[in-house]
Image (tube, rainbow, N blue to C red; front, top):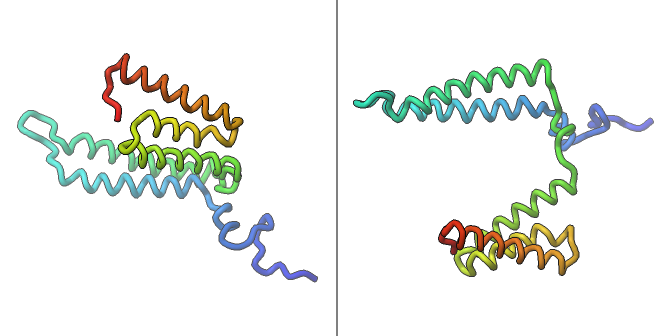
Length: 163
């Protein structure tokens, strides 16, 4: 008889299985609550009233106070009526690769922008985003065309200074 020690519900074992069984709404709600409480506490460092009326601390204090109430309501709802597990919502390998590709392309853009300018950095960003889904020549043509169009719109039509 095979041992089932360490195997949990749904055949998932180990830390990966534990993570996939967690209530995603609860964890997000707790993170949002911690964020709201932190900024609520920081809002007390700003004056609530000034000589002219409302001070710089009024808006953040009220916004964070309301956010705390919303976070508590969301935590309650995610634990009672709308429970969803991380494993049910977590993207697959292809989707995670797409997200990582966009993140890497943005980092490359930021690293290149001040050294080679907008046209080359923007073309690199677009090429990294396109190269997995298009033929090499199409990815190159699309990346250069979209970057040049964007440059023309912002530099010429809107007079926005670009690197």
